[in-house]
Structures are given as structure tokens and as C-alpha cells.
Amino acid sequence: MLISASRRTDIPACYPQWFLRRMREGFVLAPNPRNPRQLSRISLSKEEAEGIVFWTKNPLPLLPYLDELKDFGIPFGFQFTITPYDRDIEPNLPDKEALIKAFCGLSERLGPKKMVWRYDPVILSADWTVKRHLKAFSEMAKRLQGHTGRCVFSLMDWYRKLSPAGKALAEHGWTDEEIKDVAEGFSSIARDRGMALSACCEAPKFDRWDVTREACISEGFAEAVIGAPVCGRKDPGQRASCGCIQSADIGVYDSCTNGCLYCYANTSRQVILQNTANHHPDSPTLIGYPEPEATVVPRKLPSIKAAQMKFPFNNKE
Image (cartoon, rainbow, N blue to C red; front, side):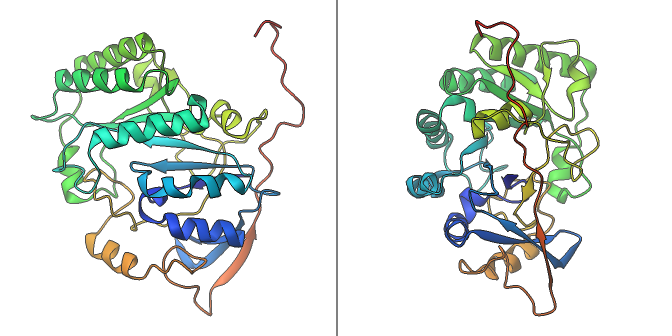
């Protein structure tokens, strides 16, 4: 099975020590988001965990542990978000120069196929115009050229779980002309830098331009991460329009301290403060300790490895 660490919070940025302890102990207890007293016991042993996908805006706190992490024998890759926003939107992130250097360093250690750059979300506002985004995207793509073959982007949407500040960012609607300018411009820039530009849930909006519909955790990305052919089923825990293959997420909502205004995984600053104060690096759960009345159910997903090797039709490939 594939481990997702995590769509719900930034584990590399906020909880690297906890994660390494879970790796050493070989399992994690992940609460059901709808029923926190129902815990899934998810194995982190190399016999069951075939790969790990880290979702992060800041891997710097995890970097000192990379050698130990590699020693566990479970391959891993990154969905790494780097956007150009200032601290009025992303208040707790390091400067972008440090993040770009971290991306390039990870690519050199792991290989560019295990690195996906996420320019996500594209916020349209009086400050962040299409023209400004095109300039920022071009500058970042130039820096990341050769360190990834793929960029995922999405337009800022109105999520039910967005904070009031996040909803304010999403109030500016997108005209057809603005969508065209972003998709066409990003696509041209990415192509010139040797990157495929893709969108997951929003891909139908961009059918007229060179934007591929490829899931964030696609079979291709999973194959690059684990180094073997993959045949995974669609993840039933994601939106209907999401094409990602199934993975076991080990995170908890309302626990990320990056503070990004557009975040859909945080709903209340007060809840975040309560949760982070209740984090214990020695606990098998990310927040708090398992309650005595909690129900623990082993969760073992099917292997994502294909039963048979895939062979290209063209033997030159």
C-alpha cells in the first residue's frame, strides 16, 4: 500500500520527529476524520508500506532525517508546493529561495521523477493578477528546470472548509479569458522548461490547451516513487473528480501550523492551537493519545504493484 503523509497536514514541516518515531516503531494510528475515536492501525513496515508520498510546503525540518528515512527501505517522493505568495498569505513559511534550494537538493538526492512541483492554488486578486502569476511562474520554472518533469496547478476555489480569510481570497471569480491566459501561459512556460503541466480535478477546464489530466498521485508518479509497475484503484476517499490512486493518509485536519490563508485542511485557529498543544512526539496518534474507549481497526490496503510487468510496445523506450 501507499502511505500519504499527508493531504491533511504538513508532516515534514510540522511533525518530522513524530513521523520518524512512527517509522522506528513500524505503525501509526490514524483517526477517522468523521469519528476520531475510530482509529486505523496503519503499518509502516517495508513489508506492507510500498512507498510514501510526502505533501509539503516546507520540507526543511525533515531534511536532517533523510538518511535515516532511507535506511527504512521504503521509497518516497514529494508533492512539493512552492507558490510566490508573501507572508500576508503564507505567514509561516521560509523564504522562497530556501524552498527552491530544498527542492533542487531533494531532486538531486532522490531523482527528478520523484519530485512534483505544485503551483497550487493560483489566486486571482487585485495584487495577484494573471500577468504577475505568469512572471512568477516563469521565474520559478527556470529555477526548477531539470529538477522535476511535472508541475501541477489549480485555480483558487471556494471550499466549504475555507476560513473566512480564505473565502475572501476565493471571491474573485475567473473569466474564460483569464483561465485561457493562465492555462496557455503556464503551459508554454512549462513546456519550454521540460515540464508537463497537469491538473487533477480541474482538468476539463483546460482541455483546449496543453494541460494534461493527470492525478496528483497517478500510477506514473507512484511507479517513479516505488521503482516498479503500478496498478492502483481510484481512491474512494477523494472527490469524485479526483483521479488519484488509493493511499492511506496518516494525518489529522486542523493541525498544520503553516498558516496559509487558502488552506482547506484548517478551519479554526483556536482548534489548531488546541491540537498542536496536544501533540506528543511519542504518541502513536498525531494529536493526543488514544482514548481508552477508542476502537482500533487494522487497515491494510491492497498492494499497488502490478501483478505483471509492463512492457512498452517500442523496445527503444
